[in-house]
Length: 129
Image (cartoon, rainbow, N blue to C red; front, side, top):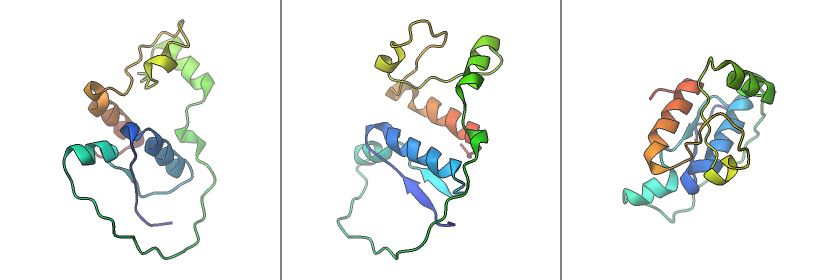
């Protein structure tokens, strides 16, 4: 359980970010999210390999979930009503328009905001930026 895990994905790391959260909620200490994912790797013309990694099977035991890092609906409603903390909405525009009465503004995952979203997430979970 002390192995460094680096996650990345296509589509601006959406699923990698979800997997990152899953690792964190179940107590994996050393998990990283690759900045920009595979898309950025390709844009920067970084090297790829077709070499198959040699993996040694092992046993992994997840911890009990740490619910302190999960925001529940009642907590989000409280933030919206009190306006005492920032609320970052990263839903896509289509997801956002499903709730027209929502008081926050969607910032989506556009290239313009990618760094801002990453910075907010990193500060929220205590990563160096």
